[in-house]
Length: 263
Image (cartoon, rainbow, N blue to C red; front, side, top):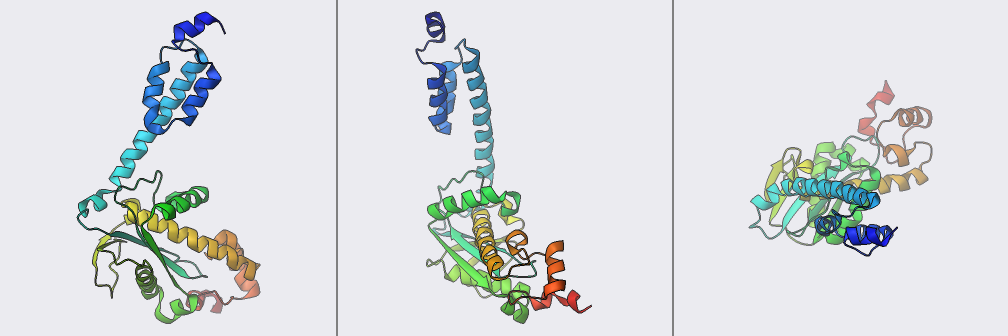
């Protein structure tokens, strides 16, 4: 690389140094760095500018999506503690139903947060730690398979949600719920259809509930080998169904969900 190249580019940095500058920059710094090197004549630097311009464009798109997910939080911003609630595990043949109630700071930004079903397992695990770290408070509710059999899955879901609210340790001012109105709670509630994709608080609750339950089912897989709970999380996969017919139900199976075994 010649001195002339450095002069024409307006910098005395080599390409490795420029690449490091891009890599270490926060998203909001990228436009300034890109502009600084736009006149650089080196093809590798031009390639870096193009690469990080695309990254910044994706970042801007994600910020807009995230702002849209705050519409309900913004509508009810006069409330001090806005709590999102969601559950996971209504459909499986085995394991508990788990609910999460969570309160996020009003200025909270967690990139890529979304309905847990729209995320990969790796992304959920990454977001789980960030959500817990940034949350003001969160609570988990869990209702056992035996209790599900006793009172039915809908009532068990409500019970798990009530537990989650109690376990917050803070009394919320308003609840944003995924589609339901929870009986037996004297707090203002806002049921939101498909709320886990429309509210950052409900999305956060859906992720924490999902990861919590997934971890629990991995542990159950060790206690009850042969059903592949670590992979199917208690849902009725073909392997799980075959195991049920061969081995019979375990103590964590929901007997009211296994009527097909009697046929």
